[in-house]
Image 1 (cartoon, helix red, strand yellow):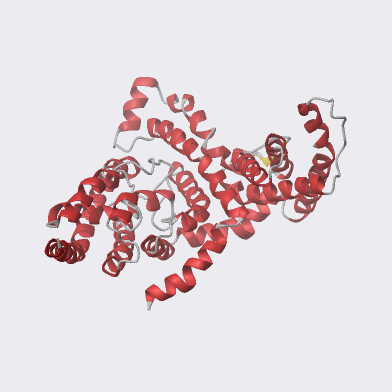
Image 2 (image 1 turned 30 degrees about the horizontal axis):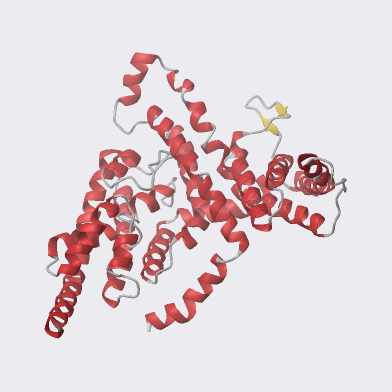
Length: 432
């Protein structure tokens, strides 16, 4: 029943989404920025290393304001996510249309700046003008970046398609031709953005503020809830069991997960981060706890294989797959076993990520493990190390508990699969 539903309905519907030009451009554009989050995390770890007494120790050596010399590094990464996404998304979408990528990227950045807030009310009540705020250049502006990038590229493409450009002789250098070709589309794009900005200034202050309050903030609230992450965990396991890479879901929610992590950091800096005020749905929840060993919590399968394997086939798979799974790479075990559409693997691949989510929620809710902040670990960081980096020793302990339970859940299914392999090997031996 489930197999028919996945093959007949789910897989075709997911393929329709993942094959669209916009989805592919967005996924490529967002993943192009992921190295920046890792770079920012390195410097944030220097200022906020998860060991009690660390801040006091550093203050005693370098003085109370030492972190001010480090913080520009992560503010130039985390706090520019919106602006940079406007550039990378414009680039990737224009690339798919075979347009002038560099020109469209520049116009995409300009479009984002045109609609961004340029005033700030200070604590004194005075209004500062002609400024760009980090708040709206960062994760709060991600949905704005998506909208302005799409509009920019489509207007540019429309002008090129309709020949609404300034023509130059063929003898003119290419870079000069491209510069003049962009004039009319550029003026039109900026004009449209000015109109949008003017309307939004009257209604809600600016386009990013309107989008954040009406769309992004409600979505962040939904994603921040534990039950939402349970659904994400379930879908990750189900899709990977069906051979569909979970990035079709994850890449859509990553911007919201990063935004929630940034919101938690603001609360933590103010000393107000609690289970009541903070978000559970952050990038660390997904990368470091719901996909240990890869989607479907494949670390449980590879460890149970090492323990229980008796067949030659499973022994061979476990040797090949165990080390990659330590770095959250699940393709070797997924396709070598294979787990795709395997009836035995459906239950553990769905159950273990959901259980992991519930354990993390419980650990945070009772106060054992702190909520996630903007301190992140690369997705390929092995468990224990990743848990310690994002949540201190408590995070590492929770990961140990999760992995142990995951192995126990996978074990009976692994043994049953091993028995199948032994039977198949015996049949082949008889035929030989």
